[in-house]
Length: 526
Length: 56
Image (cartoon, rainbow over all chains, first blue to last red; front, side):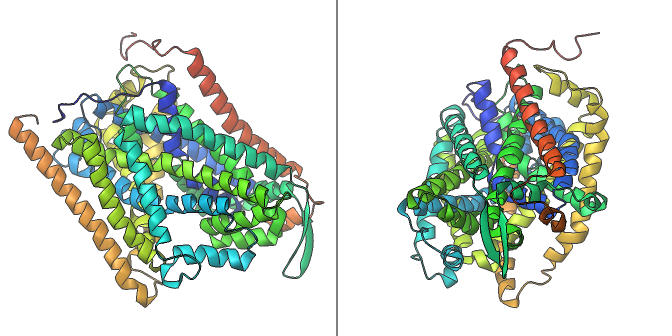
């Protein structure tokens, strides 16, 4: 049981819980990553493996993580070391659970840095700093901000200032606790995010066609061409396993499964709370934000103003180029002048900021719950201590961003690690805890019954998908990245340092888990 | 994706294939969200299924 003498908090309302869970899931990837993935992986046909993965992997993992979280939470455990230990009475379980502490902390730190860009660009939009810039100017403006070594437009201190503010806002929210902090943020931030997105979608889809010249070719296109570009099916893509893995990966990222944060949120549920219907509502809200809103913004806007060839070039440049270079250029081209450009910029970067912060506060929750419950720290003390750590380590990302420091954390913790944790928790909850026990646990307090055909899916199909993903990613990505294939010689030392910091955090967390369980053993609580 | 298919239609046209895929994706996402929220709103928070294992 928990060492903390304070009673565990609970969610204030069901809608607050669902908004917080959806806020956790809806992130920058819904608006920046999804459209690129769809365009690059078969257009309309991408949606077939995407929704199959949603039904066979996304929804089952959503239920598993809510079930694991609540099972641990009612036993006083708000993080995966305690949850896994409660589910599986084996000394190794708590150490496997460290993955659910390690990954959210790692991702939180660099995610807050990226989130700080959205805050900065909201400010730049208000102050008109991106108004009137052409493509080269906008690219230089962005590169100067994210690459301190070649910064020529912004002051050196500016990225640090916005990162500091972002960290302060995040940890102010989490220091207030679940109901007064995270739930309140979700109740304010999620409606604002949806309102901004709906306004922008309406504006983009009602744009008049524009005639452009790209590489000497003159074309006329409108927003519907953007949607056609995105959704026209390429049937050959269905036979490509990479497309299926890309779709499954996108489902992983978009639902924030395999991270440890959903479990932490679910730990504040009670036995009487429904998690089956609430889990579906959360996933469906995320899908609406991603497919209906995220899919109707960036690509149609970029195609309208840059043409399909231009959009392909933008998509190849990456998600951040799409969000921070191309979209401000689109806003500068909107009819109505600088005021409209500023307003659209505030809404775009504002919605990205709310998408980011409602996710990042969830990533802080497992570590805070762990120290509160195992070392008796108050919420404020644990929040501001983690804030100081995030601030210090985040500065490394700011300084070494373009040298691959962030990429290492993003791959090992924010990509590959997600599949590992998802597989471990599925094995522990479904296979070791037992399919029938897991099934009964999911139905405690449930408002609806899960269709019976989901039992074999959760037991066999979901783990099989995860194993295939892990093997494929190990062979095609993890090994070459581990061996630093293609990394410029001048970046190798920075990447090793990046790995060293990650490993140091992992080692520290393993030691903390050992100390916590030694304390429990001394009190006779194990 | 095959951009020649995209270029073959007149400007600012969605096309039947894209419309079907987009409509299907939107209907799935919006339909699931609407169904789940209607179900949530129509189920009082204190009205639950009986405890697991209590139904023979």
